[in-house]
Length: 72
Image: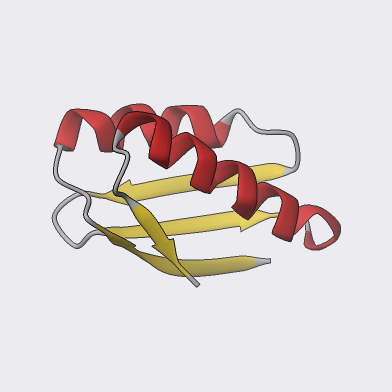
C-alpha cells in the first residue's frame, strides 16, 4: 500500500533526510520518501504491517523533531 502523509512541524532538511533513511529500514517498508520542501512523506509498505509501520515512523520522526507529527 502506498500513501502520502503531511508532516506538521517539519523544520529541518537534515532531520528529514535522517527520518527518511530510518523509516526506509523498518521491516515491512518497501520505500519511504520525505520531501522537506512540500512537508510530505510518501510511504509504501506491506498492507498487513502498514499501521505498525506508520506508528514506528511517527516515533522516528519525533525522535529527530519532537513536535513533528504525521497527519493521518
